[in-house]
Image (cartoon, rainbow over all chains, first blue to last red; front, side, top):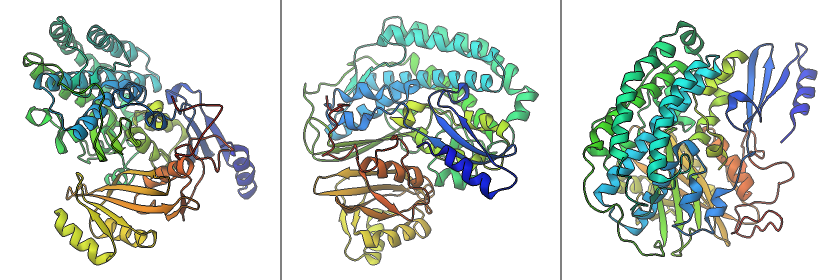
Length: 378
Length: 150
């Protein structure tokens, strides 16, 4: 893993101009987690970016092999901790697919509401952190003002602010808090009053635009080949929203647009995420007054046993396509489980998209991949 | 393209392939030797341009490589499976066809010990130095110090 010095010695020996190797991380403010990048530079130009992973690898896939279908969902909140509802959702859906359980409509609506609130909260954090990476500190506080409101709503209903563990096979763990609808509506009102500040502070800022435009270009072909999904692929014009292409729960009955930008640079990916927040608000507005009455959980057995076979379920997290692949031997625990994490594939394009650009642009390019390291390491 | 048409084309290319239609998508099982030419055909002629999941399953008697493929233009899916020997598992890389395989094959290399032939940079990705030869996601892996089993 640490052949850094070897590279330095070998390549300086071959190249009289002198290459330099710089380590970014594992503790670095711009990587937002323990990501280690070994960057080979020629002057200021990036020649190679090598990610070194594993600093927060917990072997969740191996752990899940000894956990039951009710237990393993709680571990998955710790993968992409900014989309923990959506991770739980993917696992619950995959188990339900194996058991062929029909989820009550009330539970479906609550799940979609939670997913979309999570997506807004995740994009808020990314938006604040992205601006901070480029030197603007104020937007972070604006983003957190709204994000805290969502966290408070989550805390009231789920009892947690980050690792919610709210979705279980068959529905949700318990009913929503009596205040839930009122507080979400208050949040929507607050959000609409404040959203114009986002564009005024950051989007329209000429310094910000100059830093972002033309940086970290990804062509549509590369985005597909590298397995990119979510806003990273949609910034290059690749239509890949799982909610539209392979709808789950009630997404096919909802009115919302898949946000596409065609420029393929950092600014395009920025715009996709900002516009996605508006679409998520649209979904929440459609559902918040129309939560049907009924059960919040289907009746399931205390001990779940999936039939022998293979089950794959994908959902759209804030970062892209999360896949859960369960291989079952008919027991109470999965024989093998694989999480196709969106961040892992999105990270793989980092080297390709930054080669030849300046070291100063690295953070502007990397920031728009929206990397969450526990999601990559698992 | 529907599953029957796809199955007919694949049978023509690999006569001894076995199919499984019980799951959500068409599953095809091929030998190691037939895998690489099939992968090239899938990418270049059948528009399977998105490799969305690449993983391996340890069945104790053998390993199975699993490739989940999708076409973003046509929308069809295919799951390709290849059985490998547990002692010296080797398979030709596909990372020149689908670039995402580069990272995924490195992950499978360290967690299962599957050697991807012709891979440009097959090193440990997640595990620290000195883990070569110990493959944590194999069923027979046991670590007395850092217990993973609960």
